[in-house]
Image (cartoon, rainbow, N blue to C red; front, side, top):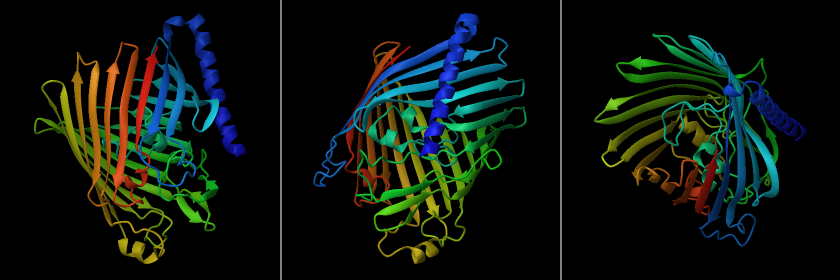
Length: 425
């Protein structure tokens, strides 16, 4: 705990230092300084019946009551060689802890040359082509934020590291070096109900021992091929979601097995729309699938198509699948009381978007359906741009499924409606 607090404090101190630096720059080189940010309210209310006799968090129907303010100062050298930016959030969440806290989302500086650049510090990295499915985007996510209805940008988390880019007419490349491991933020049992419930107590959460001599490495090489934007990927690091080792019937230790990912993607014009293809091989630490605690190696792939129609209407469909390797060993070593996964999991999605009233109103509908898991997710949403600086969103997250342990079906007691309002400056 002391180590986690010290790391958090270091990040906050770094962000405050950057804020002080750029504020000082305001009075010295104001033409290179910029300050943006927002004031925001996030509210989410559970609409489903919990059916669990008043146990915590079953008696919590408010999933989120949050006020948030972000300061985002930036500085750019007039020559364009050096720039710095930070995003520091201050927030108050009345559901879990009724006190103000702070989080450093980003804090980095960049160096840019003619054919290369570097971004160093806390940053958000996004790779791949999937719509809410991630194959070669191996960087951390906040799944709690997604489920309870925070703005979609809060699904992504920052990493502390360096991203180096090299560009040429033949081939472009990005190298990401991450010396400090950042795990996914998994569904929060303080406010959400999910499988298994009640969840066992976490005895330990053992993070990988990464440092400058043992970092995570991610590589992306890309270029157009016959007018298709094509990329290949490699990652050497760890699973972002933990494996679980049961210490007793009521306590568990989390740890993060090593992982390598090899992948590719391509996107281009086809059938009067945009066609996207992506695939990846997840090379697990458990090479033969003999350890039931660790995810087996997998092949993951997706096919997606998007088309714009008249009247500011856009439609997109997506097929995603993952196939477990060494499935026979998995079933042989699986404990008798544990639910058995299917060898293959399929997921279909549809996204419909319509802009109205001079594009100030955005109607959207996103759905997932898995014919293998027999579960689904529905997300209708309305966004209204009240002015250039003020917008509001109202939406709903609806989950259901035939089984309580599937990826989407486990959240069937967490259906919610949410409301976001933000003033940007």
